[in-house]
Length: 263
Image (cartoon, rainbow, N blue to C red; front, top):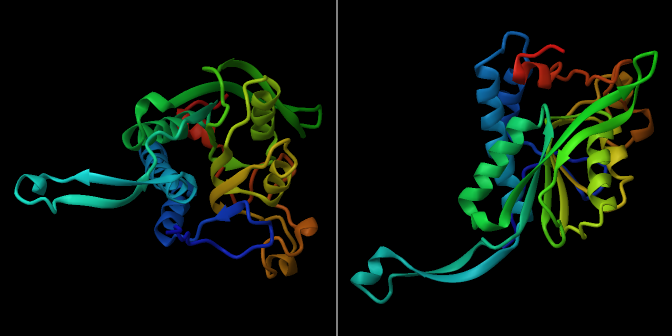
């Protein structure tokens, strides 16, 4: 039986899923508001990513039919559950992209360990930063260090990163895996709280297909008439980035807020 997501209508293609969940939208709006700091900020991050990874598991992970005895089997032979569950042997890699991705990755990793066989779940680590030019324009992303635990062949590759702005960081991370001779993942999935039209376009240019899951699409720098159109219908005229490539309306620097570090 197919899992039915609640998501907005758009013209970005079938691999882009912008969820339409009032509870999560409300909590994300709180997260982005000026008055929210620690410890509430990280509490909301945990709550939002716990929900987001569950949607991804429901929608994207394979299932298997099982027959499992319940406690009632002791009193009746009919005490057997028969049905579909998530395939607990689905090999999965969660990529922590420091620093905004540290907490989201840990939440996803812990959740997966609770539903899958922990032996098939791995967490990798990439230390990344934006690269900018003399005018403070983002030119790409660089990887300062990494700890990759081995092959990704046949595995679900998950990249939780709250702010999908330019897409350069995640595109660079994906390229690192695909160029390293580590095999071909079964799926590549990003888990974002907010994405922009620019992010979606960049991720659609990677070497392998990428599926995007996000709670919100921000395109606040678009002209008013473009904002009135369905997202993606006038994609070339849409923008969610200001002159320094921060998301608008966005929520500011999540990495700084998450770590209480402003450098």
